[in-house]
Image 1: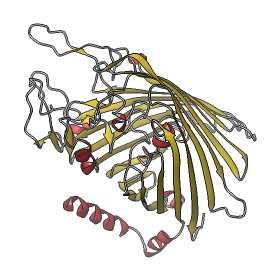
Image 2 (image 1 turned 180 degrees about the vertical axis):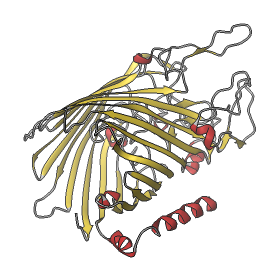
Image 3 (image 1 turned 30 degrees about the horizontal axis):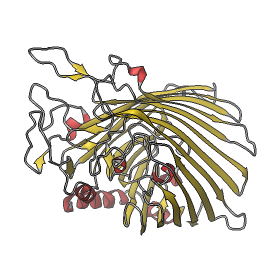
Image 4 (image 1 turned 60 degrees about the horizontal axis):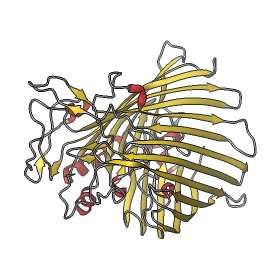
Length: 504
């Protein structure tokens, strides 16, 4: 840990030395600061779903909580007119009744040259090609879990390829980082025999392309591939395919290259049944948009794959995916944006998995069990799934009778979701989320009668004209049905956001 911190400190000092004295002086300009107080109250079986999820790991699992948050940041976009841009931020949270008593939510430093950005540290990042306020979130990397500290080289916005006159653009990133939930995993698994890991590493990459030029023709197409994995570290309570327990704290394989190009094998694989080392998954993204004069409509697909069985067309590629539509209406006093999504993950390549053997050479790579992994537990960070929260996080495992497990055994779902927002006046805005989910458990732990859940969020934000820095957000949440039981709750947030030497 000391070596890792030293490397980050050295890189930050190196990057901050770039540029002239005038460039350094502007680091104190266009700095935003803020503080907020949040309280929740209610009763019932579980906290309202949308109070808990898609809040970057800061959602509450308790009914009565209090949270204080303060931040300071400078967006790298402040230097959009310059060749070099610099941004930074720090964001801290404390309180009681929440998932963590105190945490550093964000701590990052960005340096950008033209369109290319190097980002160091822990930073909240949106899902690809989705509306952050109204969508249920990305299938591979969403907004559900706390951000992971990482080194990330990226084209953060679509970059028009020279010579294409703006008709072809790309967006990409490659990142390596490390998980910060060692203590939480130890405590969550205390006294159990479930698998967990310590000091595991993170990798993600994406390449998205865009065809179209909105300035000359209203139709644009975006598509591409996003991939991520968890690798390395030490494994505990790991069982090999013969049913034997491997020693505690066994070193898990993987390095930067094997994370980038999936290869190798896990410590509990037979040599003949070897798979890619680590917990690999990804998404195919497609989005088609039509942009009118003061309105737009877009349709999108986010297709999740685990390992390689859903990467191609062999195992019913079209059967499992998140499908959505987003409509931005002409300016009016009622509704500004509508999002509808359908999320289906019932197939998962089918119910049968079989490795090829001498006796039966037929290979069937099915029963994917989305987000689950036999060494790392699941695709999670601090108990929250890192993808779409409709596949319930390990923190909900009491629902499936597996408290203390890191697995996601409620991953076969069929869900419909609607999100709406509007701004009746310049001082009042609102948002509504409603989700209906039918959950069949998993192929390993099936639910004979589908569990059903209705999740509702109603939210209003008041910003007084006389105090533009102040905002008051009131929200009502509801759960109903057999999936998470019945619950009601309220959430009140008071925020103050200001600027230091604003020049933009």
